[in-house]
Amino acid sequence: SLPVVHTLQIRDVSLVYKDGVTGDTQNLSLPVFDLSASSSSSPMQLALEAMINNEIIKISGNLGSTDVLSSNKMFPVKLDVAALGASINLDGTISSPREGKGVNMGFSVTGDDFAAIADRGMMLAGIEGGAPLPAKAFSIAGALRDGDNTYSVDGLRLKIGGSDLGGNLSINLSGSVP
Image (cartoon, rainbow, N blue to C red; front, side, top):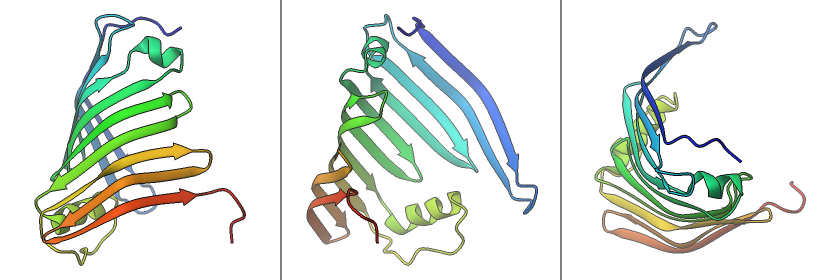
């Protein structure tokens, strides 16, 4: 079983990576990382604030207990994320958390300016050039699930400005690859 730790706090960590060939620099700072639980059977509370190349990322919410994690049983996840000007909510479970399998995760992503968020994401990924996307409010929601070599998004709803798209999406990775 995992050791019992009631509170883990990490404060004011900075990491600078410099590519020796290109000279490009990547900056990561972690002003706040708090993970706490009142006991090994209690849900863990997470609070994280990070900055990657001047983009602030905040994550808060609840995770399953360390007992559930160490026994590799149904692990609940409920997180709120703020990044790149978007709000992301995750709410679901992972049935085999130590293997990262059995994902059943509801999600929603909302933002006021699709183009600006995409541009910020591309800059963060080191991709130059703007995204030719509409500068309109958007939302994406659905339920992500996995199986044996399969992934699906059920109840997918995508809205950008006055346009919307809905349905189900599934990917099967078994079989031969062309």
